[in-house]
Image (tube, rainbow, N blue to C red; front, side):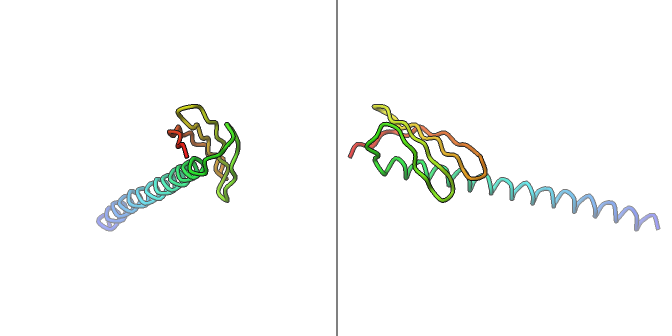
Length: 94
């Protein structure tokens, strides 16, 4: 009887560690996807070559606000889930 209880506890601990690792991995992948989406939105904002020094571009996943200086483009991306990412990209002269 004691053997069965010990094996159940050990199996429960192993299962708990495994499930915790899977959940953490899924969170990490979701955060990476959000960051890559925000980065893509910032690069698309830069590639549009906006004529104004500042403005806003709407995407289906969020909003990118930009401000141009002579050398860099500062882009703030706000996703639908309210996460905000900041990027500083070199200006592309067309």
